[in-house]
Amino acid sequence: MDQIKLKTVGKNEKSRALLDMAEDLISKAKLHFPTCSDKSKASNQFDCEKKAKSLTYLEFTKKLIEETKENLPTYKIKKLRVGSQDWSPILAVKIIKQKQSYWKIFSMIFYISLFLSLAVALDAACPEIVSRAAWGARNVNPQAMKVPVSHVFIHHTAGATCNSKDACSKVARQTQNYHIDTRKWADIGYSFLVGGDGRIYEGRGWKAVGAHTYGYNSKAIGISFMGNFDKAQPSAAMIDAARQLIDCGVEKKFITANRQIHGHRDAKCTACPGAALYSIIQKWPGFKGGKLPGYVC
Ligand SMILES: [Zn+2]
Image 1 (cartoon, helix red, strand yellow):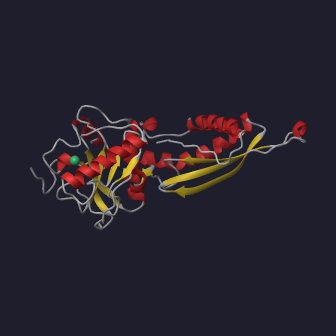
Image 2 (spheres, protein in one colour):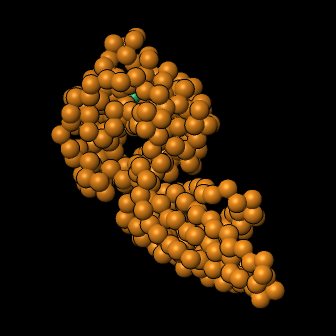
Image 3 (spheres, helix red, strand yellow):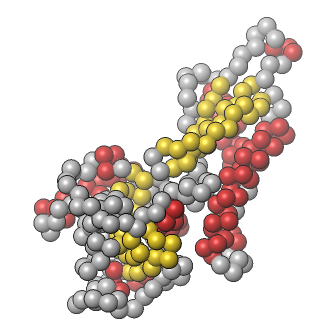
Protein backbone atom coordinates (compact mmCIF):
# COMPACT_ATOMS: atom_id res chain seq x y z
CA MET A 1 0.00 0.00 0.00
CA ASP A 2 2.77 2.42 0.81
CA GLN A 3 5.14 0.99 -1.70
CA ILE A 4 7.77 3.52 -2.67
CA LYS A 5 10.31 3.20 -5.44
CA LEU A 6 13.35 5.39 -5.87
CA LYS A 7 15.40 6.04 -8.93
CA THR A 8 18.28 8.43 -9.42
CA VAL A 9 18.64 10.29 -12.66
CA GLY A 10 22.11 11.40 -13.60
CA LYS A 11 25.46 9.74 -13.04
CA ASN A 12 26.98 11.99 -10.41
CA GLU A 13 29.10 9.74 -8.22
CA LYS A 14 28.03 11.74 -5.19
CA SER A 15 24.40 11.05 -5.92
CA ARG A 16 24.56 7.70 -4.14
CA ALA A 17 25.15 9.46 -0.81
CA LEU A 18 22.33 11.86 -1.53
CA LEU A 19 20.06 9.02 -2.46
CA ASP A 20 20.86 7.26 0.81
CA MET A 21 19.83 10.36 2.70
CA ALA A 22 16.69 10.69 0.65
CA GLU A 23 15.85 7.06 1.31
CA ASP A 24 16.27 7.72 5.00
CA LEU A 25 13.89 10.67 4.74
CA ILE A 26 11.37 8.60 2.94
CA SER A 27 11.52 5.81 5.47
CA LYS A 28 10.81 8.43 8.13
CA ALA A 29 8.00 9.88 6.07
CA LYS A 30 6.58 6.39 5.66
CA LEU A 31 5.74 6.45 9.34
CA HIS A 32 3.20 9.05 8.44
CA PHE A 33 1.46 6.93 5.88
CA PRO A 34 -1.81 5.96 7.45
CA THR A 35 -3.07 2.69 6.07
CA CYS A 36 -6.48 1.33 6.54
CA SER A 37 -5.34 -1.57 8.67
CA ASP A 38 -3.70 0.89 11.05
CA LYS A 39 -7.03 2.58 11.33
CA SER A 40 -9.14 -0.46 11.97
CA LYS A 41 -11.13 1.49 14.55
CA ALA A 42 -12.80 3.31 11.69
CA SER A 43 -16.32 2.07 11.32
CA ASN A 44 -16.23 1.91 7.55
CA GLN A 45 -13.11 0.27 6.19
CA PHE A 46 -13.64 1.51 2.63
CA ASP A 47 -14.11 5.15 3.62
CA CYS A 48 -11.13 4.86 5.83
CA GLU A 49 -9.00 3.82 2.88
CA LYS A 50 -10.26 6.60 0.70
CA LYS A 51 -9.60 9.15 3.40
CA ALA A 52 -6.17 7.77 4.09
CA LYS A 53 -5.33 7.95 0.42
CA SER A 54 -6.02 11.65 0.09
CA LEU A 55 -4.15 12.35 3.32
CA THR A 56 -1.20 10.23 2.38
CA TYR A 57 0.22 12.41 -0.33
CA LEU A 58 -0.22 15.68 1.55
CA GLU A 59 1.16 14.23 4.74
CA PHE A 60 4.07 12.75 2.90
CA THR A 61 4.97 15.97 1.10
CA LYS A 62 4.76 18.01 4.28
CA LYS A 63 6.83 15.54 6.26
CA LEU A 64 9.45 15.22 3.57
CA ILE A 65 10.01 18.98 3.59
CA GLU A 66 9.99 19.14 7.41
CA GLU A 67 12.41 16.27 7.79
CA THR A 68 14.72 17.77 5.22
CA LYS A 69 14.82 21.08 7.07
CA GLU A 70 15.41 19.37 10.37
CA ASN A 71 17.93 16.71 9.47
CA LEU A 72 19.64 18.03 6.41
CA PRO A 73 20.03 21.79 6.84
CA THR A 74 22.40 21.95 3.92
CA TYR A 75 19.88 20.47 1.57
CA LYS A 76 16.54 21.71 0.47
CA ILE A 77 13.67 20.29 -1.45
CA LYS A 78 13.65 22.14 -4.70
CA LYS A 79 10.78 20.72 -6.57
CA LEU A 80 7.76 18.60 -5.97
CA ARG A 81 5.79 17.42 -8.89
CA VAL A 82 3.06 14.91 -9.38
CA GLY A 83 2.84 13.21 -12.72
CA SER A 84 1.73 9.89 -13.96
CA GLN A 85 3.58 6.96 -15.47
CA ASP A 86 1.58 3.95 -16.54
CA TRP A 87 -0.97 3.54 -13.80
CA SER A 88 1.07 4.83 -10.90
CA PRO A 89 1.04 8.43 -9.79
CA ILE A 90 4.56 9.72 -9.61
CA LEU A 91 5.96 12.20 -7.17
CA ALA A 92 9.23 13.65 -8.37
CA VAL A 93 11.43 15.31 -5.79
CA LYS A 94 14.56 17.21 -6.53
CA ILE A 95 16.94 17.67 -3.63
CA ILE A 96 19.60 20.32 -4.03
CA LYS A 97 22.67 20.71 -1.92
CA GLN A 98 22.96 24.32 -0.88
CA LYS A 99 26.24 26.17 -1.07
CA GLN A 100 28.08 26.59 2.19
CA SER A 101 30.45 29.46 2.90
CA TYR A 102 33.57 27.28 3.27
CA TRP A 103 32.62 25.49 0.14
CA LYS A 104 32.26 28.59 -1.92
CA ILE A 105 35.20 27.91 -4.21
CA PHE A 106 34.61 24.22 -4.52
CA SER A 107 30.91 24.40 -4.33
CA MET A 108 29.08 21.70 -6.08
CA ILE A 109 25.45 21.25 -6.61
CA PHE A 110 24.18 17.75 -6.73
CA TYR A 111 20.86 17.03 -8.30
CA ILE A 112 18.75 14.04 -7.76
CA SER A 113 15.40 13.31 -9.10
CA LEU A 114 13.50 10.82 -7.10
CA PHE A 115 10.58 9.20 -8.65
CA LEU A 116 8.31 7.86 -6.02
CA SER A 117 5.73 5.47 -7.23
CA LEU A 118 3.11 6.03 -4.64
CA ALA A 119 0.67 3.22 -4.86
CA VAL A 120 -1.70 5.52 -3.07
CA ALA A 121 -1.77 9.19 -3.91
CA LEU A 122 -4.37 11.82 -4.56
CA ASP A 123 -7.41 10.37 -6.22
CA ALA A 124 -5.74 8.10 -8.77
CA ALA A 125 -5.11 5.11 -6.56
CA CYS A 126 -3.73 2.56 -8.94
CA PRO A 127 -1.17 -0.13 -8.17
CA GLU A 128 1.78 -0.88 -10.42
CA ILE A 129 0.51 -2.83 -13.41
CA VAL A 130 3.02 -4.87 -15.41
CA SER A 131 1.87 -4.49 -19.01
CA ARG A 132 1.44 -7.40 -21.41
CA ALA A 133 4.48 -6.20 -23.35
CA ALA A 134 6.53 -6.12 -20.15
CA TRP A 135 5.79 -9.73 -19.19
CA GLY A 136 6.08 -10.98 -22.77
CA ALA A 137 2.48 -11.81 -23.64
CA ARG A 138 1.54 -13.31 -26.99
CA ASN A 139 -0.48 -10.90 -29.13
CA VAL A 140 -4.15 -11.62 -29.62
CA ASN A 141 -7.24 -9.80 -30.83
CA PRO A 142 -9.26 -8.72 -27.81
CA GLN A 143 -13.06 -8.73 -27.86
CA ALA A 144 -14.35 -5.41 -26.54
CA MET A 145 -16.37 -5.45 -23.32
CA LYS A 146 -18.95 -2.84 -22.35
CA VAL A 147 -17.81 -0.94 -19.27
CA PRO A 148 -18.30 -0.18 -16.46
CA VAL A 149 -19.00 -3.67 -15.18
CA SER A 150 -20.60 -4.32 -11.82
CA HIS A 151 -19.00 -7.64 -10.87
CA VAL A 152 -15.48 -8.60 -9.84
CA PHE A 153 -14.51 -12.27 -9.52
CA ILE A 154 -11.52 -13.40 -7.50
CA HIS A 155 -9.64 -16.52 -8.63
CA HIS A 156 -6.41 -18.30 -7.92
CA THR A 157 -4.31 -19.98 -10.60
CA ALA A 158 -3.92 -23.05 -8.34
CA GLY A 159 -0.42 -23.22 -9.78
CA ALA A 160 3.04 -21.88 -9.11
CA THR A 161 3.79 -18.91 -6.89
CA CYS A 162 6.50 -16.35 -7.63
CA ASN A 163 8.40 -13.63 -5.82
CA SER A 164 9.98 -11.42 -8.46
CA LYS A 165 8.98 -9.63 -11.63
CA ASP A 166 10.94 -12.14 -13.72
CA ALA A 167 9.45 -15.16 -12.00
CA CYS A 168 5.89 -13.78 -12.06
CA SER A 169 6.24 -12.78 -15.73
CA LYS A 170 7.18 -16.39 -16.42
CA VAL A 171 4.10 -17.64 -14.56
CA ALA A 172 1.98 -15.21 -16.60
CA ARG A 173 3.47 -16.55 -19.86
CA GLN A 174 2.97 -20.16 -18.78
CA THR A 175 -0.63 -19.43 -17.81
CA GLN A 176 -1.27 -17.74 -21.15
CA ASN A 177 0.28 -20.66 -23.06
CA TYR A 178 -1.86 -23.12 -21.12
CA HIS A 179 -5.06 -21.14 -21.73
CA ILE A 180 -4.38 -20.69 -25.46
CA ASP A 181 -2.73 -24.01 -26.38
CA THR A 182 -4.49 -26.46 -24.06
CA ARG A 183 -7.79 -24.82 -23.16
CA LYS A 184 -8.06 -23.35 -26.69
CA TRP A 185 -9.09 -19.94 -25.40
CA ALA A 186 -8.28 -16.78 -27.34
CA ASP A 187 -5.96 -15.46 -24.65
CA ILE A 188 -5.04 -15.77 -20.98
CA GLY A 189 -8.44 -16.05 -19.31
CA TYR A 190 -8.13 -13.46 -16.54
CA SER A 191 -8.47 -9.69 -16.75
CA PHE A 192 -5.55 -9.31 -14.32
CA LEU A 193 -3.26 -11.50 -12.23
CA VAL A 194 -1.70 -10.75 -8.85
CA GLY A 195 1.91 -11.83 -8.48
CA GLY A 196 3.51 -13.02 -5.26
CA ASP A 197 5.79 -10.00 -5.72
CA GLY A 198 2.82 -7.70 -5.01
CA ARG A 199 2.58 -6.50 -8.61
CA ILE A 200 -0.44 -6.67 -10.87
CA TYR A 201 0.03 -8.37 -14.23
CA GLU A 202 -2.21 -7.24 -17.06
CA GLY A 203 -4.22 -10.09 -18.57
CA ARG A 204 -7.05 -9.13 -20.88
CA GLY A 205 -7.23 -5.79 -19.09
CA TRP A 206 -10.20 -3.61 -18.22
CA LYS A 207 -11.95 -3.46 -21.56
CA ALA A 208 -11.92 -6.98 -23.02
CA VAL A 209 -14.29 -9.90 -22.53
CA GLY A 210 -12.56 -12.52 -20.37
CA ALA A 211 -12.61 -16.31 -20.01
CA HIS A 212 -12.58 -16.61 -16.24
CA THR A 213 -16.11 -17.04 -14.91
CA TYR A 214 -18.78 -18.91 -16.86
CA GLY A 215 -21.83 -16.70 -17.40
CA TYR A 216 -20.05 -13.53 -16.31
CA ASN A 217 -17.18 -13.13 -18.76
CA SER A 218 -18.72 -10.20 -20.60
CA LYS A 219 -19.85 -8.37 -17.47
CA ALA A 220 -17.10 -8.83 -14.92
CA ILE A 221 -13.43 -8.30 -14.20
CA GLY A 222 -11.60 -11.50 -13.23
CA ILE A 223 -8.60 -11.15 -10.95
CA SER A 224 -6.45 -14.20 -10.31
CA PHE A 225 -3.91 -14.65 -7.52
CA MET A 226 -0.85 -16.55 -8.74
CA GLY A 227 -0.52 -19.63 -6.55
CA ASN A 228 -2.73 -22.04 -4.65
CA PHE A 229 -4.61 -20.45 -1.76
CA ASP A 230 -6.62 -23.33 -0.51
CA LYS A 231 -4.53 -23.65 2.66
CA ALA A 232 -1.87 -20.95 2.27
CA GLN A 233 -2.85 -17.31 2.63
CA PRO A 234 -1.69 -14.75 0.08
CA SER A 235 0.69 -12.08 1.41
CA ALA A 236 -0.53 -8.68 2.58
CA ALA A 237 1.17 -7.16 -0.48
CA MET A 238 -0.90 -9.37 -2.80
CA ILE A 239 -4.11 -8.53 -0.98
CA ASP A 240 -3.34 -4.80 -0.99
CA ALA A 241 -2.51 -4.89 -4.70
CA ALA A 242 -5.79 -6.62 -5.58
CA ARG A 243 -7.85 -4.22 -3.49
CA GLN A 244 -6.06 -1.21 -4.98
CA LEU A 245 -6.69 -2.59 -8.44
CA ILE A 246 -10.42 -2.77 -7.74
CA ASP A 247 -10.39 0.81 -6.34
CA CYS A 248 -8.42 1.89 -9.39
CA GLY A 249 -11.02 0.32 -11.69
CA VAL A 250 -13.77 2.19 -9.86
CA GLU A 251 -11.86 5.48 -10.07
CA LYS A 252 -11.29 5.00 -13.78
CA LYS A 253 -14.91 4.04 -14.34
CA PHE A 254 -14.24 0.51 -15.58
CA ILE A 255 -16.09 -0.85 -12.54
CA THR A 256 -19.26 0.60 -11.00
CA ALA A 257 -18.99 2.09 -7.52
CA ASN A 258 -21.67 -0.31 -6.25
CA ARG A 259 -19.83 -3.35 -7.65
CA GLN A 260 -20.13 -6.76 -6.12
CA ILE A 261 -17.08 -8.87 -5.36
CA HIS A 262 -17.39 -12.64 -5.55
CA GLY A 263 -15.22 -15.71 -5.47
CA HIS A 264 -15.23 -17.94 -8.55
CA ARG A 265 -16.97 -20.57 -6.41
CA ASP A 266 -20.02 -18.31 -6.14
CA ALA A 267 -20.72 -18.83 -9.86
CA LYS A 268 -19.58 -22.43 -10.30
CA CYS A 269 -18.92 -25.54 -8.25
CA THR A 270 -15.18 -25.09 -8.02
CA ALA A 271 -12.73 -24.71 -5.11
CA CYS A 272 -11.39 -21.53 -6.75
CA PRO A 273 -10.15 -19.12 -5.33
CA GLY A 274 -9.16 -21.53 -2.53
CA ALA A 275 -10.63 -21.66 0.97
CA ALA A 276 -7.97 -19.43 2.57
CA LEU A 277 -8.32 -16.67 -0.02
CA TYR A 278 -12.10 -16.96 -0.08
CA SER A 279 -12.30 -16.34 3.66
CA ILE A 280 -10.23 -13.16 3.16
CA ILE A 281 -12.35 -11.67 0.38
CA GLN A 282 -15.49 -12.35 2.39
CA LYS A 283 -14.44 -9.41 4.57
CA TRP A 284 -14.01 -7.00 1.67
CA PRO A 285 -16.58 -4.23 1.21
CA GLY A 286 -19.05 -5.15 -1.51
CA PHE A 287 -18.48 -8.91 -1.13
CA LYS A 288 -21.48 -10.99 -2.10
CA GLY A 289 -21.18 -14.72 -1.65
CA GLY A 290 -23.55 -17.61 -2.17
CA LYS A 291 -24.82 -19.14 -5.39
CA LEU A 292 -25.21 -16.42 -8.00
CA PRO A 293 -27.85 -16.48 -10.75
CA GLY A 294 -26.71 -18.92 -13.45
CA TYR A 295 -24.62 -21.00 -11.00
CA VAL A 296 -23.30 -24.04 -12.85
CA CYS A 297 -21.93 -27.37 -11.80
ZN1 LIG B 1 -11.31 -19.45 -10.89
